[in-house]
Image 1 (cartoon, rainbow, N blue to C red):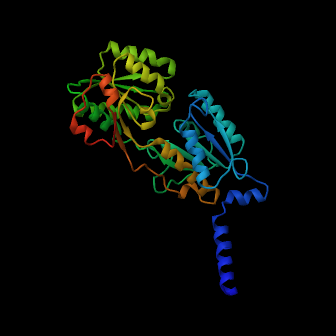
Image 2 (cartoon, rainbow, N blue to C red):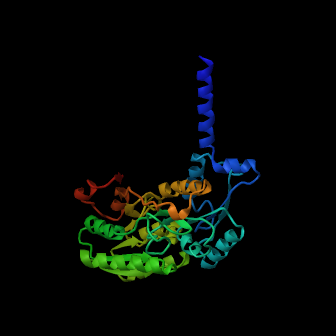
Image 3 (cartoon, rainbow, N blue to C red):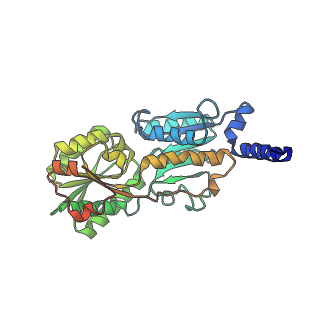
Length: 333
């Protein structure tokens, strides 16, 4: 091969390598490894699976290796409001380069700092909750990935109505601790139930210890089915909810595959939460490379899955109509 061609090839390799080399790796050469603070909602990395693993995989996809070209500071508040507040204060005091918050932790992190770039994950309505000015142009120090919610509770009620012939009374389980989002969920559920022709009653649980009492109240009220609000507390308590649903003979509808995997749920309708979390490091990467959160559009999920668990349906004596099975993205038998 001619020498001139070799030089051109070498130049392309060098330039391409420089462009692909993450800023974090270059920072390491100057002695500074960027630090990313991550505020979760559950009590441990194990309780946060599969999302904890999804976040780490997302960083690995981009060439980040913990301890070499990035440092991750994780905090696990265990769904305790005071711990959310103290732990976000810890991360701000560390002056991390980027703050990542997994909803509902995001609502505690929202006003904790106006200076540190903030990547929120799975916030249902970032504009309505005033995280950003708009999805296209966030405008402040925060951007991230939304957990699309508008209209989904209505669809869950509709699917349960179709799945259970004669259904007339439905419960809605909500954690009122995060005020505005919880109220929005209740308002949507009430409006949808009225439109569909269902009697809906709301039941509250502020902690996992309150779930037993909530299910006892549902049985006393003769609720026929339950829609579980898409909230962190109920993700953390999904095995408990599954056992209580079976014990009380109460078919439930949840909001994601990850919750349905715990058992007890007849239906699930929503996006893959693990996929959303795995995308979060792309936002961190952009910020570490110099992009401003104000200019990075908020990402919304584009794929919404309807999952039907026939095994669970049979346990509850439900024969799901073929018309609904035909519309499912996946039927679990």
